[in-house]
Length: 316
Ligand code: UDP
Ligand code: MG
Image (cartoon, rainbow, N blue to C red; front, top):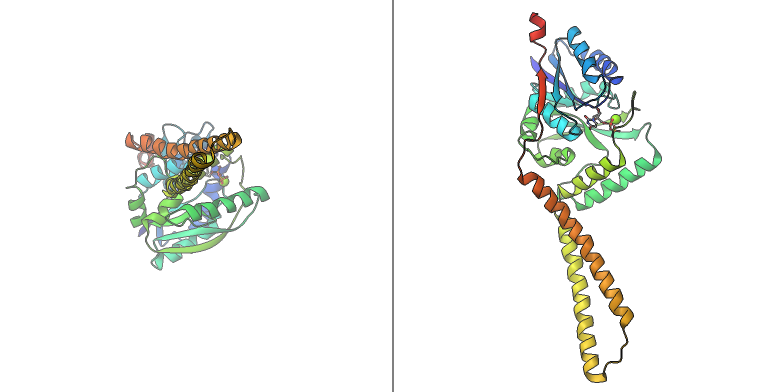
């Protein structure tokens, strides 16, 4: 029998975990005769009773396993840890706040059986999300799409089924500043889209503060693309060309018509403009250098406090 891992990262989701388990369990019951399932919870340094909730579930269900990370690393790394420990022939990644409807699971499995390696969910409407967040996210995906060398699909997130070949590929990528949405595209394999309607978060609050969103957004662009560097090159080139022409003009006109102290404003404007651009582009280069610095240290991406496959408990 094929094995399927339900992988869910969790960070302070104590109210959601029992409901998540119940709802997913209800859906996969009908598939129980064909597949064996495992629930793999990744505790991403929760400070509430999320892990205790999982341990409670373990007493009821031997399929419940968990990885307890040594601290909060963020969802991207939590997912990597999950993929490292997942045993399934396929892995279904879901948020633990029930925003990803479990009813889609059978459809994903169906497409997997049809031979697709990466069956991803595409949000059609976003319930419970503000107009502004929706607009911002649309604009962001537009920009990312223009800048990325690999296309990143709009409204497609981490809710997806990955075949073992995809999981094995993704875990070989050990970047610590991960932008998994870009990685799914980068690894390739046969993809299939399934539409779903995202629910409102069941309980608790979103973990994304603006700062994290900005970080993820910048990571998404920087780790996917060298185009900002090229952009800075072009702008630098054009500006220096203009500067050089103006210099020639000043030189020649001074030579032939003499020079009274005019053009002071021009100088000030040019200095300010060019130094402004230099700062801007230095900061872009700085982003890349910072990333190189972090990657070049080649640290392990995360540390695990504990992995529990829930087998030892059974024999007790
Ligand atoms: N999450 C995590 N580590 C974090 C932040 C979030 O594992 O540092 C998990 C969280 O528990 C949830 C999923 O990632 O299962 C998505 O997070 P959230 O619902 O806060 O994001 P949103 O749905 O608002 O984008
Ligand atoms: Mg959520």
